[in-house]
Length: 96
Image (cartoon, rainbow, N blue to C red; front, side, top):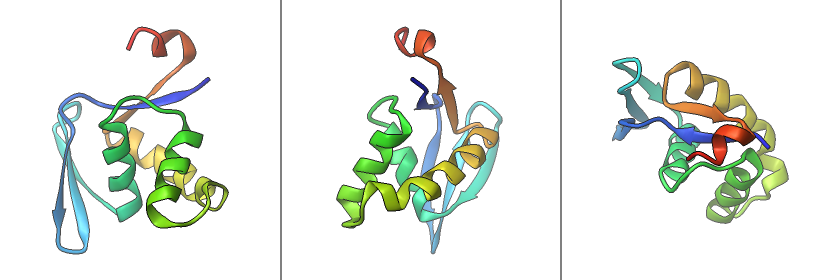
């Protein structure tokens, strides 16, 4: 099962209507939307598969996990490219 982990040293702060996220991995700062910032907040608790992230976001927003699935899937690529999240494949996930 594919899980996602927040990279070590990632920092997130609100800046007006958006979020600034610093990646210690890349040394760069990215601007994020609310959903991406919420995903990073969830991953601060530990690695999680996409469906669990959707469940947790749904419980906070009052929506359904199914309705958030496409949105969350779209956020992964941006978060990974920004050096804020990494994929953990099953073998690596047990090492965390």
